[in-house]
Each structure stands twice: as C-alpha cells, then as structure tokens.
Length: 52
Image (cartoon, rainbow, N blue to C red; front, top):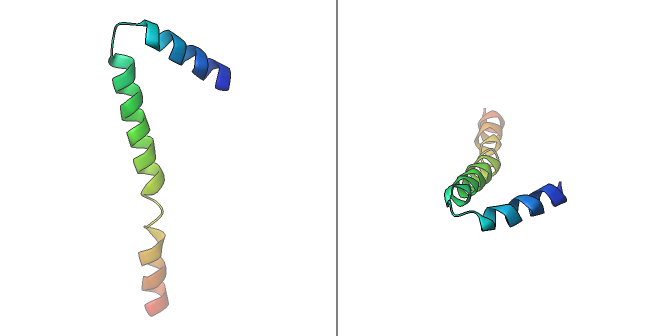
C-alpha cells in the first residue's frame, strides 16, 4: 500500500489542480472524526447501566 500512495503523491504534486489536496484533506478530517467519535460513546452507556 505504501508504493501506490507514494506514486499518487508524486503524481499529485505535478498536477495544477488543487482538487486532490482538497479531497484528501476532507477525507482525512472525516476519518479522524469518525475514529474519535465512537470512543466517548460507550462510557455514558456503561455508567447508565452501572447506576441502575
């Protein structure tokens, strides 16, 4: 997976369109948001069942 990523980055730097940078930034922000969101969700559920 590392070689295709390096190839994509090298080709993306040669293009004039900033669309690749915008899309990759949006995807990275969405992935980081989705990765961090489920972590705090089980805690209130656990506390709710523990208090009942």
